[in-house]
Length: 253
Ligand SMILES: CC/C=C\C/C=C\CCC/C=C/CC(=O)SCCNC(=O)CCNC(=O)[C@H](O)C(C)(C)COP(=O)(O)OP(=O)(O)OC[C@H]1O[C@@H](n2cnc3c(N)ncnc32)[C@H](O)[C@@H]1OP(=O)(O)O
Image 1 (cartoon, rainbow, N blue to C red):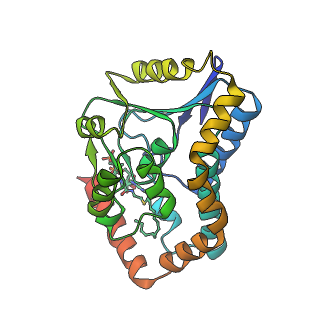
Image 2: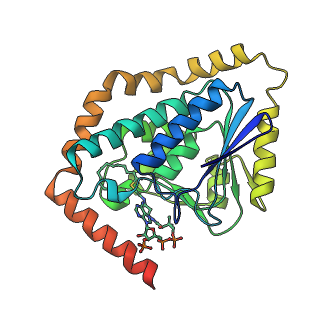
């Protein structure tokens, strides 16, 4: 992860080849978010070092034949990442310079503003298409971004939106021709708060988001148990094996 700082922290996800979210990356993100808060940055922009993938979502290897202690730590660290990002008092934006499926879409929808590169990229919560259920807080992040009816249809169909579709439904706020332009547009969004007192801004954001945050905070243990029960089911392990094989086959073509 690289952080440039000119008052606005630009945090670049850098875990080749596809920025899949494993335990190490999630821990690094959490440390970085804490640093951004401590350094009193004006705001934070999340982007990717890959020219084609913002993030491929959760690292499936963390869930396939998992070590019991590690997979639990993995999930709790993912919850922490979401609580820190969705609940950040500083302004957040995502310069989405590539595909953003599942956990990649979760990161983007946890930010306050999204700029995505025009091109053949897709974004969405595709869990149902994989035969799994997007956790409540994944669903809440989408519902917080696009109208409820569109969110329900997107979640139940596992829809991956093209850039044009994402713009039309409000899943992204703007498009950009390249990464530099996407970052500039995100900076412009964050600079809109230059004349707004930061305490009032931060508290307003937290009040606006508190219901959704509270849901996970009060249900953390149950959420973790639900994930662990699911991930340890033989049928889920079988699906993960097939999905991994499919991804491998596709990447070797
Ligand atoms: C599936 C989980 C099931 C059950 C768990 C139980 C339930 C609770 C969990 C609920 C929440 C889940 C949220 C998630 O985020 S799950 C992950 C969903 N992600 C995806 O479906 C994306 C999969 N990847 C892709 O579609 C493409 O890789 C992508 C479009 C992002 C990029 O395509 P590109 O052509 O550029 O790269 P590839 O050649 O496909 O991939 C390169 C190598 O990376 C490996 N890869 C890709 N994605 C993942 C991943 N998410 N985890 C681990 N590894 C991944 C891919 O296999 C290639 O590997 P090699 O063959 O090079 O070794």
